[in-house]
Image 1 (cartoon, rainbow, N blue to C red):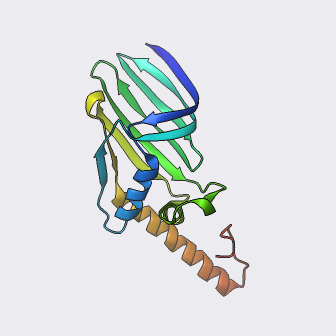
Image 2 (cartoon, one colour):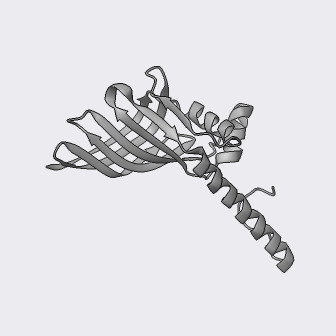
Image 3 (cartoon, rainbow, N blue to C red):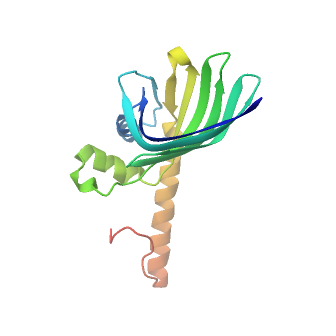
Length: 173
């Protein structure tokens, strides 16, 4: 039993390309189909920081304070690593943030930002070390996106009826 922590700077996560994953999620939103794949060794996601602390007991390291940051996404989450079974199970909520240079991004990436920005995307990473998979429950995400859009429309409509100035930072949109 014990504790451990990590704090990494300017590194790369191997096996998942979050940029490509978010584009898949965006494309899958309309069909509500889950996005699930095996982790692939050739894929990579650069990050500016990754930190977590762990409580370790009976060969299982648990964390509930994962903090991941890249120039266009922030993620928080938790889970466990079973050292004996050589497996892990993590639920991470990744939130797309628009980088300062977004005008130089591809049209596909701008579309992802527009649809997913500020919306936590639930990504479960699970399995044995030699057969890791990740899954996004797109149905849950689509429900949250619909709730957010409905709330935005209701607030705008109510504000117009009450003669209130528009709120938020939508930049006049």
